[in-house]
Image (cartoon, helix red, strand yellow):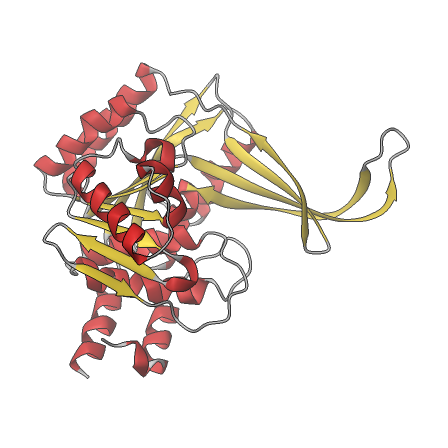
Length: 332
């Protein structure tokens, strides 16, 4: 019962924690329709559009996750001077984001992904993006904003999808700043940039990205251990958290600790956005004072709830509380 109380209290402590989110803000645009004919112009299907939807994606989905877990997000990123950018700014305001650094670029589009879906099947995706690094003017504006707000935040998430916002120069400026103020930094980066995150507190990655970044093929528990230790040594971080899909989460700690957390027993419907849920839960828990293994256990629980839902959706604190009450076997 003591363990149960620890985790339920941890969920309560997530509320109102201020988390700075730096990264690639995106719009997920869904077009739904039917295919009943082939185009006379080319051998391609014609989609008769029935409806469409817009959702926050990329680092903006992390913002969404923080909101629904009761935290206070402070988003930092770039949007274009376009309809997608205006939609994102309006949507974040409607979600209650009180403060943000949403810089408008005149020469970069808002990163957007249009998915065409027919009868539940993903037919095609169209991407709008510019992946080259942001210019020094935008980078300096981000640094100035962070310097003015760093003392107020309980944690930082760097959500790097390699769309050009998070550059090596930006990391070299911000990581020492966060460490100076003893702010927990959780990095969630794609394989190409992962090894640039030396000095962050926690790296949250998965088996595919970590294998690619280290050059070690993931085959079994031994190779996984080598991957985790390689990242710990190279990045000099406090812990590496590797999500493993149906096999749960593995936590490699600087002090030598290695903990394998089995996945929960839920039926998987959709894994879209589960990484954002894990990163958000992990960071909020760490900002609340939790130890990294306990934070990872709670994040694993949140992942189990998310995979039962379709699409890019979030997990709320009330859902976490309910799950913890109903699942006695969860407690270590």
